[in-house]
Image (cartoon, rainbow, N blue to C red; front, side, top):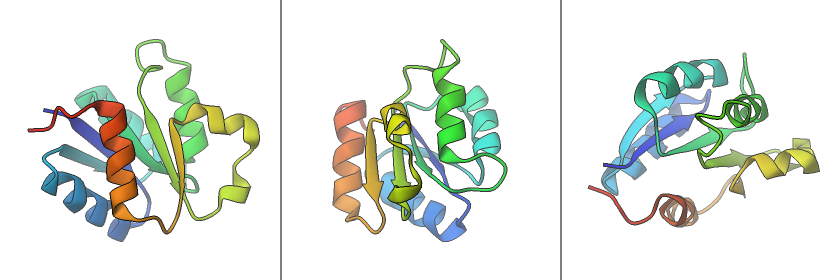
Length: 122
């Protein structure tokens, strides 16, 4: 089964994305901060991460940077979803396989995820 991790400090966002992905057959875990996400990643080893940019404790960029510096996790595809794309430095865009600007159509996110984890859902 393909496992996803959704990281966002807004519970409405994590709840909606968890529902959306589960409906598509993915196993989904959620975290509220980048720091919490690192703990979940250590336990669950997701196949892909969907993260927000601006979060308390550790931002989406800080999370992606930490993952890229760990050779065991550097390969993980990370999708950034943000309402503040102007806050993302150009050099940080390379940390992500895709950057989606909120609001985005759910189908767009599903397409991006499917493209990076393949069609292997439950």
